[in-house]
Amino acid sequence: MDGKDRIILHVDMNAFFASVETLSHPEAADVPMAVAGDPENRRGIILAKNELAKKAGVKTAETIWSAQQKCPGLLLLPPHMEQYVEYCERANAIYGRFTDMVERAGIDESYLDVTGSTTLFGDGAAIADAIRSAVKTELKLTVSVGVSFCKVFAKMGSDLRKPDFTNVIDRANYRRTLHPLPVTDLMFVGKATAQALAGMHVRTIGQLAALGEDVLARKFGKHGHVLYRYAQGLDDEPVRRAEEAEDAKSIGNSLTFRRDLVSEADITLGLRTLSESVAYRLRKHGKKCAGVQIAIKDPTFRTIDRQMSLHQPTHLTKDIFDAAHALVMRAWRVGVPIRLLSVTAIQLLDEDEGVQMSLFGQNGSDGKQEALEQMKDNLRRMYGKSIILPASTLGNDLGIKEP
Image 1 (tube, rainbow, N blue to C red):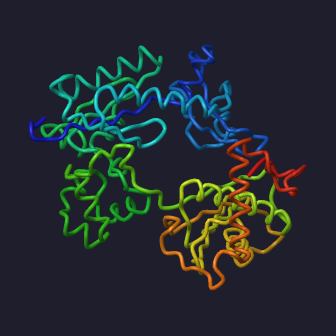
Image 2 (image 1 turned 135 degrees about the vertical axis):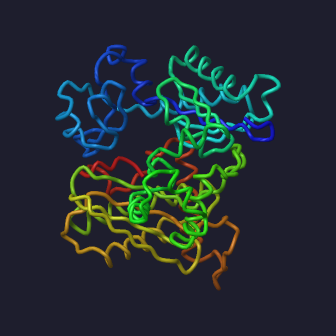
Image 3 (image 1 turned 90 degrees about the horizontal axis):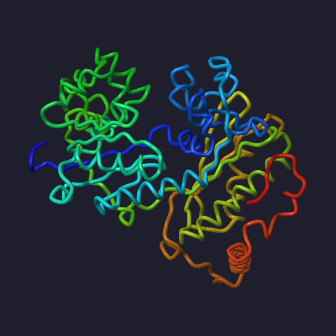
């Protein structure tokens, strides 16, 4: 790799959820196994699978029923998110021994910039091998590591060889290694983009790169520039430390209900629960929202979404609920079943940014609502989220347990 290049690693934990579960269930190591949601709560999809299940054709996000048709002996285990978070923290602590430039890209993957670490630990491949060894020894898990001069190629490198492998994509081999791959292997080439490229007789990454930046920009606008730069290895996006992470652009929650929502009372209960959760998280992060977005999914998985701007930024449950309720009532006919609802706060601002004071200050109903919700926050921080629950949630049959 050119001495002037950055040295970027993408570390991807292999079959992460399934591998963590195998630590507690050794019997799962030698049989096809998948981590799956609870079918009784209508979350019956495959969340992760081991290599044996993968070889049997089981895919992430397919239904349990479909997976069992392909693999009748499939062992199903429930997820344990607290364990996955713990192992994520432990893995990133290992990465931090080699560099302070670690960017988490998900619970099971991270980017590392080890350019400044080579004098201590060797070249990029040596550092990748040391990380793989440490994770295997200390956590009993395996990782695949892509090593390259940019983030995009490092990620593609980790995807190419699994499990437990170090793959170097450098200036000398990236065209030979990556350009013959299907164009869909390139980041941000989704189904629609791939179809448009197929219409231009482009089916490989190399054919995409050969089109030229101007051609792609005329066809796809700004996205065309990005595609060209990624295909040519011109991605210069830095690895961001945790403290440099960009502010969230939205805060939202969704619920898939135990039974379909049919009545307005059902919808109101679902929206109120979601709105309370979103408002609590806004206040926790010191944010207000200037807009609200909802999404509705019916039993056939048809989804619609709607959004609206607010007259004034808010972090109050009532304001978010009122907007979400108005959007749903405007977009949906009561009586048509709803499988899933989501409420998202958008157009986020810092709490003290862009706020127009009411003519009546904070002594009116908004001030009272603010004081009430802050009091509830304090109680929940002290005694847990379930210390205060809306009476409407008690004994409900929708699967709603707490805000």
